[in-house]
Length: 353
Image (cartoon, rainbow, N blue to C red; front, side, top):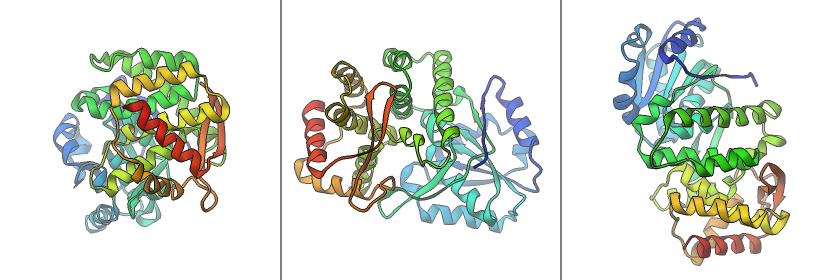
């Protein structure tokens, strides 16, 4: 898998111009959703190459990251004269970069694309690392491909267009990066004021977070080994996300991951000895900022079955986790019994109140 260029922007318009000019293309497409079309596209619409771009606009949020929307994007690319030499810019959050990346990866067997993430979640997670895809059959990211953007431009100015909930969604992935890296970065993230945002400080933390993910992806681009560290919190988190989609009450991805980290930190504690004090500190931060997903013991079997269908599992019926013996002490390819999973769901319900 080719290495993508991550650009932490200092002069966004200049750096975007350079990124586009690095490509030789016959047509330029720009993919937005109904939110980024209104809130983000105006910030770049006066640039000459954007004026000539063919815009594709889709519905917002994860509910539209599906086969129907993907087919619409393919159809627009085809009907508007897209070729193997076309270029696409994905301007949006994780839904747009996932969907647009997969559309680019598959149209004409692959066209070049640039990601401009506009949410914190997409900046530190979805737009970086080369994973693309859609939800299918009530399962999160069930269909997809590894296909990195040529360039990813990260500009914290776009974060002023999103609300606190969406900012917190991305911050959960940053917290995950802190947990799998080192104590000082983890502690710095716990201290950051999520109510009164210092955007200069946040840009610095984003740069550190992206560097952590980049280093992991470079070692293991196709998730055969250490890249599984990035799945921490996601086995339970994706089950929470799928459960919410199934009930037509979708939750933001980062919230599901935060709740998943509560479960998997508990499993880490009982299985590989994650320290109790760090467990409490992290859970307290999550509880204060993310609230709780409501479910009852009658939902345990449904949640368990969603975990069994997670794409990270290597064998039918065996649920795979990434656990932590301490901050930065990663244990991949860990499993848990149905009884242990019900126990961690009990812990979640009792701890989160």
